[in-house]
Amino acid sequence: MPELPEVETVVRDLRALKVVGQTIRRVEVRWERTVAGMRPEAFIKRLHGRRITGIARRAKYIVVSLSGGWTLLIHLRMTGQFELTAPGAQGDKHEHVVLRFAEGRELRFRDTRKFGRWILTRNPDAHLARLGPEPLGSEFRAAEFAAAVRKHRRQLKPLLLDQTFVAGLGNIYADEVLWKARLHPRRRSDRLTLPEAGALHRAIRDVLRRAIRNRGTSLGMTRTNFRGADGRRGRHQLRLNVFQRTGAPCARCGSPIRRLLVAQRSTHICPQCQRP
DNA sequence: GTCTATGTTTGCGG
DNA sequence: TCCGCAAACATAGA
Image 1: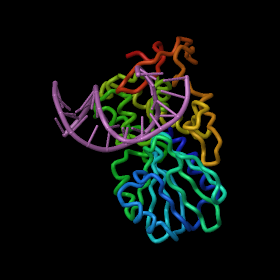
Image 2: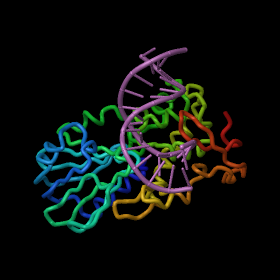
Image 3: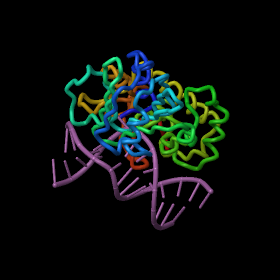
Image 4: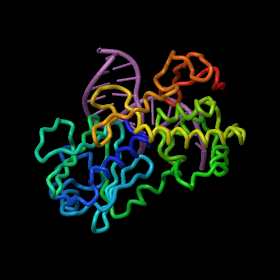
């Protein structure tokens, strides 16, 4: 269930697997609601014959640039995955969109829970306009972030999960970031000191960069867990400090990690390092 | 059968 | 206007 580091891993995999440059020769939509914003027939017709000219990431969206001025925005949501296969290979019942390339290989989108979305548009910026700053970009500056945090009066955890505030964090990395910054997830954002806001800014960047280096987090061994587009699992689960580590000792102080609910989301903290 | 799940959107009420 | 909360989407696994 991909957050920024997992989406970045998928984008890098797709590039390494030479998806850029491929021409789309056949499009199959097996679950209509995966395609958002137009009828599947229109989607298929518009995609057919186009060449993929680039693959990038914005927040948790995969941005696929196509010939003729079209862009495909793909959001993996909870269980979206990619796989490249030989033509006509045996798939499973959760593969909802299949692109066959002129060269022969097929790019298949598997999405067990069917929350993933493909948006074909001539104006991707309209869809991405509401997203907050890219946390690993140069526009994500400490002073601006601190001012923005303190201007809201929200609990820190839901604020970090708000994609219009900062783009790319999900439940795992929000918990890891708050642990690293030694901040309680229920702290009110307008009550942070400047040094605390600075620590939060730094923690966001450090945690995400490290997770990308580890190719993302794959928690369990089941099929719905994260895989790169090359089928490999991530390894950042070995580096998590709090997420799903209830009862395990805190890496800094040894106190047992606790699980609580914040904003309806499972939340993990060190009760010693992260005081309310 | 029960509970939980790494995401996002929408509508309601304070 | 801002914010928190519940539900919705749909399925699998413990």
